[in-house]
Image (tube, rainbow, N blue to C red; front, top):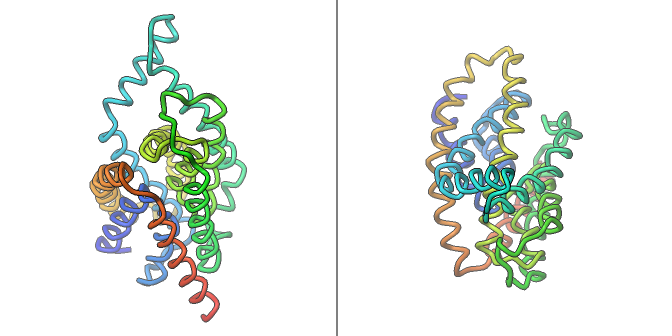
Length: 270
């Protein structure tokens, strides 16, 4: 992988991590269309670690929220008034389903269940999730009204993103919308929920990186991809939150439907 390819993959990661159209699916498609050759384990490690760039983008964008939540959780443990402590514990609770599911199916996620055909199928699944969530949700609740059932429900939806080409943000937002959160509230909770989840996956990838024979040659492309993902990810968060204040998720569902059908046709014809 050269630096131009690493930059392009970083940009794709930054855009598609937050727009609910699947970062893993688009990274796979980019490799297929551009002929970016990479061994399955190396590609998996690269994608997960470049994803940390989008994690940094979340930290930068939501740093005031995250600092307030951390301080209030500490205050709550000490018996002091802590209005944001509940949100912190709800995020922790919602993290559990994805962590458990990821641990159970880690080996399968290094390439055995990927490919064009399943990418198309799961992009269609992504479209279905978004469409059904828009139809089912009444969009009357805010994050302040959430409870533990909401957190577990959204966490279970987030676990669906372990499937290739199912977007983490789409799955988490769909979970929030089906619990009647407003679109901006569902998106905000989904983005905050990435904070405890992404480092867990990255830690596993870092351990695997040390055992990879080509680890040294991967470091510079990783750094370039990481930086691109951070900058573009920050811009994507800001754009999407502004968009969802006035618009629905249907355009993203239609996009995933069209791309998913196209990928299926291509996979069948080759």
